[in-house]
Image (cartoon, rainbow, N blue to C red; front, side):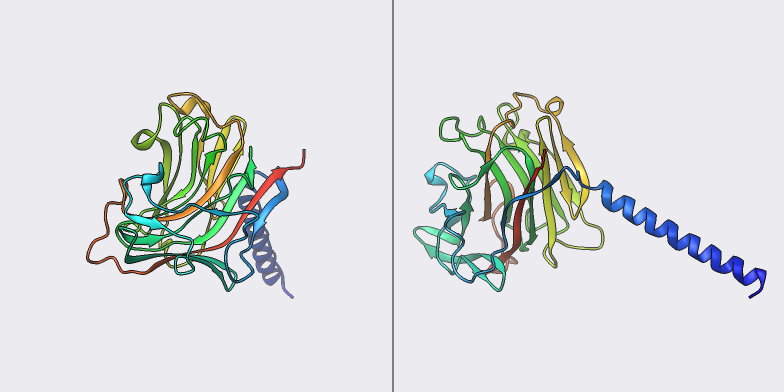
Length: 274
């Protein structure tokens, strides 16, 4: 082998080595490795109803004391929520039911799993269409004693179906709720949230909440960012729901196709081993 060929091979190896090093560094920098102890997971592996040891249903409409002028009636029917083929399947339907024009589902871990701090993540494929409003989020476990927004809310993933490339994460608390919430959008490039699965996560520490999509850090919120009390220092529980209509997305229109389905591959929570 002549000197010229040896030089070309050496140059190729160096380029490959640099590429591998950059890839490894980028993969390690997206998430805080201190959250490495799995403390809860649901892989939705058994067909049928969600695990009742972890999830409970919230039934009804916003007349129950929650909601944002949404149009759906939440049920526990298999037509609206079931586990199938390794996924949690949440389906919004256009149908007359108990005085509402749409049905869907909402489940919570309140009383079953409540935690302060950690990494909370879910792998999901979202629906599409104007008026659809899926969310993966958390509420303060003391909400019965301290009604919203005093109890606090952490939105890990919110999305409106008419904008299939954009999602957002935010916090709500006393003095910064509703339209005054603190958060940030994340927009996909050359991709959509309704055509494939994406991982939505937060890493929650005593004085910060960091937001990730597919391992990419896109925002961190600290006590200095909020305009009122920082209420994120106590246990929260998890919620998953698919709303129809409401203050944020508006109502479905003639181009919104029903039924629409949200798939959840898994939900996982990690803690530090310290």
